[in-house]
Length: 421
Image (cartoon, rainbow, N blue to C red; front, side, top):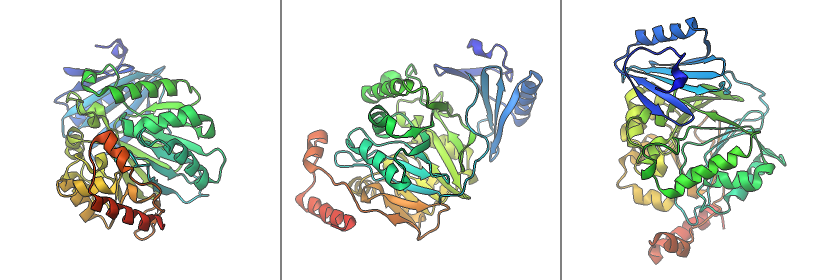
């Protein structure tokens, strides 16, 4: 057992160990809510301070601190399991909101440059003080998006140096952190970035040899580039964390820590699922959560999954289950994908059809940036002109597939209509 647990209370049952590099997790089976209450009392008796207490349905989460140690612990009754997560340092996430009320909170599904790639996603949320919270970033094949995103933030903020109060990363795949690396490397002085929020599995993970070298190396670059910016806080998220960024409220529903001891050979299962509440309106961002994450989410939550807006997982490819989207019951579904891939996936992905059929409206990222004032209200969504178009020759050279001339012409006509050209 890792030495960090030497002075940390534990349930006293046999537990599994999960070495996450910079921190360590113990999981204890066959536990009850009574066991969890006794454990929390023991923390207080040992001189720990309660930093945060939050329950999601009947899942109980507590954060304790003592000296230079933080302990996240939570009980999940569906698994009869207690997890104890120990790490050095003090928690830095805010446990209360700050309101200014000057700006209308707004969500944008940003149209990433899909000329050469069908995936990638970026969501931008304006806080009520005019700063931004950003979710993920496009693929590095969206070659100009470091400039497009920086310019877009300037445009909608009216500020020469836009303020980013928080930037969240669901996981470390190329199409979620690729362009951020470029932004921080080449445009880092053009934005004021306060904090990054994420929880990636360690590069030393037992399943790391099964991961593609491309995103393994990209995660290494992410750590190197962010390490050169000590002025930007790096906040590691754990399940049950309940925090605020300005007037935005967040709950962490799942991380790779919940999938363990299951395999992360499918790296999408390392995604952190984040729920946001703004002015009573809920939006759920599951990133690329896949089959094992789905077991966690549907195993633990029913009402907690309900929201007005849902980002469809894994770009509408194989991700979360139809049952997940039934519980979500969202009125607006956001597909971070191209029209081409959306159409290809439609016949074989029941989950996409369920999400779209339940929703009053759904939007595909390649159709143009979408602006949604919060709280969400049907009919208030604004669609921007379509800015990017498929490079068919480039796609063929990269991916070795092409479309019929009829399909290319159809896509071009649709693009002209959407772009008002």
